[in-house]
Length: 246
Image (cartoon, rainbow, N blue to C red; front, side):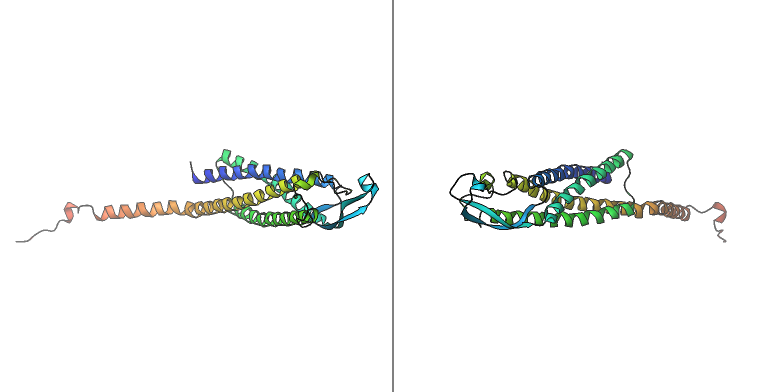
């Protein structure tokens, strides 16, 4: 199996995995956005716990603790992660189809197209890395708010079953955001792998482009050199034998 074919197969597998990882980012973020009514983002939200008598929240008389959100996180924090996931799915599907087409046709991209693929892969790698950091930091900030800086008798994952008395559905926020977080880091790792594979394909295409036109000329030069050597080593013609005078 040739090197370019192995690279194409590896790149095609990376695109297939990126589609799956991208869907595991988009679906949980979409469910979380629906639970938060599409107008609020839990990432980087700040608030505090308050204990007061509010029967309209708890439905029963007496003091009860409830979470008071001072500032909801910016929507761009959630939308950015969703955008990276959607782009990964679409780009992975398009490039995966192209890789299969090249495998069937037994040829690869041009030098310019390979260079653009490397450039785009590197850019999206940094974008997905930034989105992963934002999602991780935002989830950690929201968990600190929910657990009151880990002073509550439950963890962030267990807080899904704790009534927060907010006007949004928080019954599965940790499952959705943690799944999106893990999947987004996988997307980042896959974009790094795709960048490396794209660079190797560019290097291979460049090597083929450089060596392709030179090989016939080198072959001609070697053939001409061998013919000249064989001509110089051929025995002299009988008529050219010198006559010895006595």
